[in-house]
Image 1: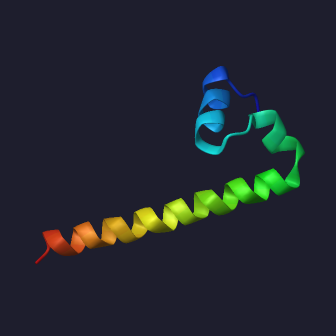
Image 2 (image 1 turned 180 degrees about the vertical axis):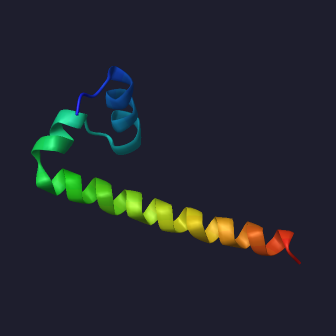
Length: 56
């Protein structure tokens, strides 16, 4: 996959590492993916709460 400068910038801002480092080092990749999963689960909880509030 080719990555763009925007992707590189987003990786730096979100995770503090560059895409090349992410690709090369398994420890970084695992940490980033764990953080992404936690953020996803948190967003799903928020969505369900908003959904519940709407359908009262």
